[in-house]
Image (cartoon, rainbow, N blue to C red; front, side):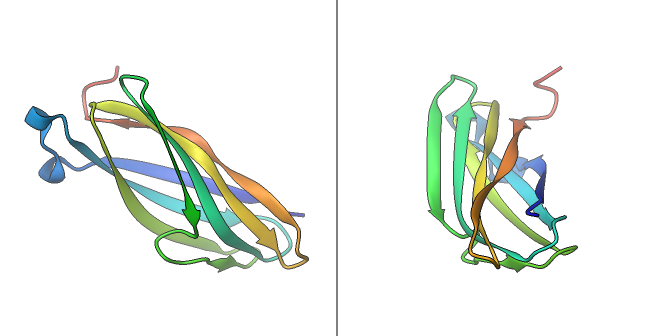
Length: 122
């Protein structure tokens, strides 16, 4: 059984942001856990990024941070990346395309998460 769980911790980076120029930089820290019973390899990613003006940007590509990790049952893979928004608030969501040791391809969903300058969302 394939059971991949994705946990995300977003972080606002004030030192890399320029609010006066509508440049808000966020990091996101990802943990991809294999709770299934077979190894699975992350092949590609698909992100849907929506800023506070409802402007949507889609990002697709091979692997993550230059890697295509093979995640064994009970193991996890962690990485960090970032995104720059034109607004103080936005969301991200998407999926990782995975392939099991048996050659089965499947999507691991990345639940929507909030990107927000602290104090902007109540």
